[in-house]
Length: 287
Image (tube, rainbow, N blue to C red; front, side, top):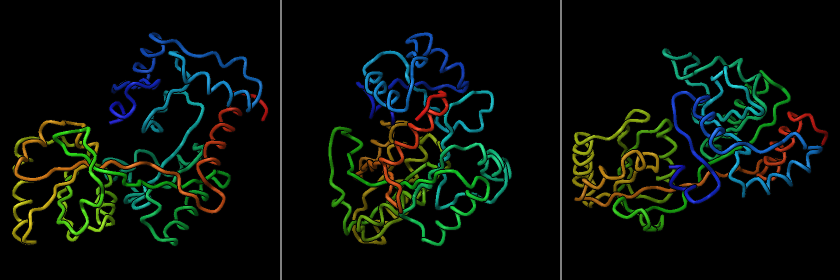
């Protein structure tokens, strides 16, 4: 998904089970920028503008990398799912946590995600829990904002969200937070929303398509109108072809944008400033 969105830009995307080896390959191929001459926070900000047009690697972002202890890092950002931040409180395999909550002490910045889908009290409880492990940690807030849809048969198509208004919709997903996906579809004004959830990262197969078709037919009988099947971008990009087999129904892909949500004195500008300042401190420069 990221590769499709970032194609043609300066970003290089590596995929591999061994994160260190993957990063090393890119560094060997492209080289890295020289940060030794940085003298101030403002110098870092100015250099960043120049580095974006260079082939050299200026910054490495590791997704889901907190538990990779063997990798050194300059900045640790922890994102928590506001709908289910702690799971059942247990580590894998008895729960979803990959590290104990005490690991929050290592974080430089925390981001509470799906903040638009939780109550103010739930948000306060999450903040209190985070600050219980690290009082000084900056906390920011984010949400996914649905922007438009496209047809699985034409990735360049652009379908307005209004297409779902008053429609019957079957949400099909194989992601970690299906609840957030379904809630976002409900907020478009769909008349009726059904869901079909698969395990996270599941790769759809022919039998899954048959299951989707049967569920859609059941929804069609129940609502007395032909439903629209909606999937996430992640699910589409795992196999863009297989969903085309659902040719009896319109299958749309929801495109959303991650946004930092202004709460109190936090916004996207203060988020960027906090990251730059934290990085400058790691480089032992004064701000």
